[in-house]
Amino acid sequence: MRITDVKVIVTAPGRNYVTLKISTDEGVVGWGDATLNGRELSVASYLTEHVAPLLVGRDPQRIEDIWQYLYRGAYWRRGPVTMTAIAAVDVALWDIKGKIAGLPVYQLLGGASRDGVMVYGHANGETVDDLLADVGRFLDLGYRAVRVQAAVPGLEKTYGMGGNSHGRTYEPADGDLPAEHAWETGPYLDFLPGLMAAVRERYGYGFHLLHDVHHRLTPIEAARLGKSLEPYRMFWIEDATPAEDQQAFRLIRQHTTTPLAVGEVFNSIWDCQQLISERLIDYIRTSVSHAGGITHLRRIFDHAHLHGVRTGSHGAGDLSPVSFAAALHVDLAVPNFGIQEYMGHLDPWQEVFKVGYTFENGLFHPGDAPGIGVDVDEEAAARYPYQRRYLPVNRLRDGSMHDW
Ligand code: GCO
Ligand code: MG
Image 1 (cartoon, helix red, strand yellow):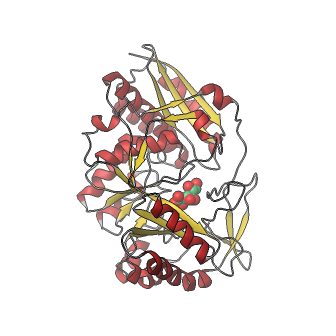
Image 2: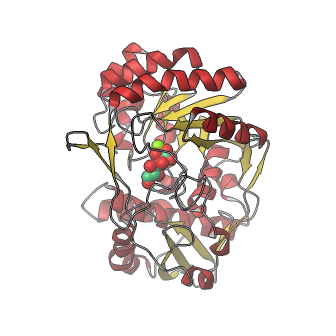
């Protein structure tokens, strides 16, 4: 069996997605997601210009060898562009292998370790009452876990809010140049404990409560936040501090029993090996599309399993339905699954992506179609051309750049 064609499809049904299609001489086709939010065309070009010529003529069944060839063979290692490109190839090859075998990918990974994949939804609100109503909406839908974000009084813009052209659904990449937000740590740290108290007071403790700090605090501020939230028994606080400094988590850890999650911006095992082996975090949030595909993600998750760290993969709307489906296969199979983020996708995504995954009682299942279980309608994709979009940036009140 040989790879005959490698095609990159850039489309924006609701938001930008970069999709990889690998075709073979036996007519089997595999799909991968290569979307890197706000930097989409760099991965598209990496794939078209530098990876496609290397793949044509190769045996698509040699997934590990192709992974190593692309990783070691580039000489330049790691990095979000490279690892997202490799991820797209890897997922497309697992899709092909599943289709050849006539099995869903989770079966190739060892089979289901659980009945379904627990996800958390995104509740948000411009006021506490508004947020409480949104949490109720998720609980009514059967969610067992809800991420809570509300506008911080005193800040003009808060991460995680809906209310733009997409209504309730949060979509951060909303400008053709980056929006500028202002950040102040004090009001945020004062506001959060009362917010979580209000949620627990209204709905009790019978579901998991999560929150994304989105990289804004120093380690000692994050330690204070974790401590102040202990009474509300958080499932986790996420990205409490910018995570390229892995040692920073030791300080947070020394001060709080609130569980810690990090890793959506990581792209290799080397970004988190200290966090994991020193048990400085509870959940690793690396994703199938940004951390080298199923092959590399499994390696990270196995390492995490050895050290009692569970999985909690990134699943924002900028990870396409191809990635979400691939994530569900991994989540269903690995022994140390924790939770999966599910933000959903913006309309009219279903015109382009035909998925087989299902949701029931708070759990997703990837379905039993051979491969990943997603098809892409290329004609529909062509109707939604790429639109330049950027994530926002953050500045402090004095104009200094801060982490967004
Ligand atoms: C999350 C993430 C997203 C990111 C987005 C960036 O936890 O879902 O933090 O909201 O901001 O995926 O591309
Ligand atoms: Mg996040």
